[in-house]
Each structure stands twice: as C-alpha cells, then as structure tokens.
Amino acid sequence: MNVRHRIAFTVLLAFASPAFSGSAVAQSVIAAAVAKPVSLPDIAIGSANAPITITEYSSMSCPHCAAFGQNVFPMLRSKYIDTGKVFYVFRVYPIGAPDGVAEKLARCMPKAKYFPFMDQLFRSQQSWDPEYGVQDVRGAMLLQARTAGMSESQFDTCVADTKLDSVINKVAADGAAKYNITGTPTLIVDGKVVSPGMVPSLEQMRSSLDAALAGKS
Image 1 (cartoon, one colour):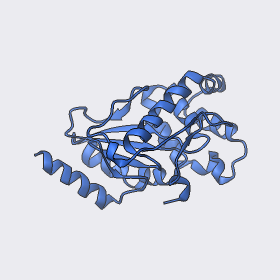
Image 2 (tube, rainbow, N blue to C red; image 1 turned 135 degrees about the horizontal axis):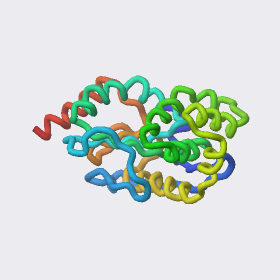
Image 3 (spheres, rainbow, N blue to C red; image 1 turned 180 degrees about the horizontal axis):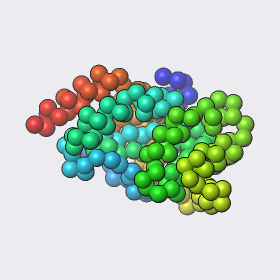
Image 4 (tube, rainbow, N blue to C red; image 1 turned 90 degrees about the vertical axis):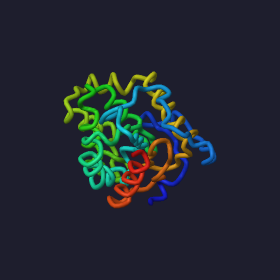
C-alpha cells in the first residue's frame, strides 16, 4: 500500500486549499451497522433488500481504488450485486487535491452518469492527477467533465458551489470517526471493516462475502 494512502487524510475540495482536516478514532467505535449518510444522499447500486451491504470509501486519485474498480469490482457486481446478494454504497473519501472537485462534478451530473464518470476518472488518473506531474489540474478536470457532457459554464458553477464542499466534508469526517478510515479503498461489510486501505484479491472478496452470506442463511 502506498504511503500516500496510509496517512490521515486531509479533504481538499478546491484546486488550492484544504477545507477539512480529518481525525480518526479507535477501532472499538466501529458501528455495528452501516451508518446512514450524514449529509449527502448515498450513491448506491443493487437491491436495498439484499442480505449484505458493502460500503466503499474511495478516492478518485487513489491508484489502489482504480485497481479495485478495474480488477475486483466487475466480479463483485456480476456475482453479488446484480444477483441481489449485495447492496453496494459508494462514498468519497478525499485524499488528494482534485478528489473533492471530482465528487462535486459527479454530483452535478445526472445520477445515471455518476458511476460512469467515476470509472472514467479511475481509468484516466495519470492525465489529471497532480501526483503524476499534471500542472494544469483545472484544465485537465475540465476536459474530463467535457468528455462526460458538461459545459465549461456548468463546470465552473459546480466547482464554485461551496455548500457542496461542506457536505462532502461531512461524509468523509463521518467515515473517519465511525470506521477509523485512514486510507483508501476501505470496504465495510455490514458495518464491519474488512479491507482497511488496501485492495482485496478476488479470492479474498469471494471468501468474505460467501462466509457472510452463509451466516445469514
């Protein structure tokens, strides 16, 4: 796991300055059930009546999150989400400067475009993330937004929405407080952290979910 994703996070919701500094608490305070969102409606897929709920805290600038999305999530979706076994909730946990902006843009788009836009960002990280040496982050993020069908005026209006900054911050702060999150991706199965800041293998994911399903039968 990259050191960048082990340290306590700072939520950055603009292209320059931090908006929130997170704090983590002991593992003993992990909730027994998945917490309700504290500010934003959750973005989720699958049946809300599924026996298992998975909550992923993710960052668009996190290469581990991109790896999870490309290598593990397709199996998770086809075998567990689409078959009604798992209800999947996605929450953003910003660790880099563009992450809060990316979440704002995704939230400003039609709901059906949310996951496709996130997938687009994961697949093109090196073209917009300053960690890869990108200098014009605004221009790079604008290009991503335009590719997803957003105009420059819509982009500017969305990025300037400071109210959205504060509610995104609250989601991340709630995750830090309840689940001791210090890195991404963090996967929570029915309120229990099973993958803290690392990418589980396909076999690990299957074993964990099959065991959880067996316990509910």
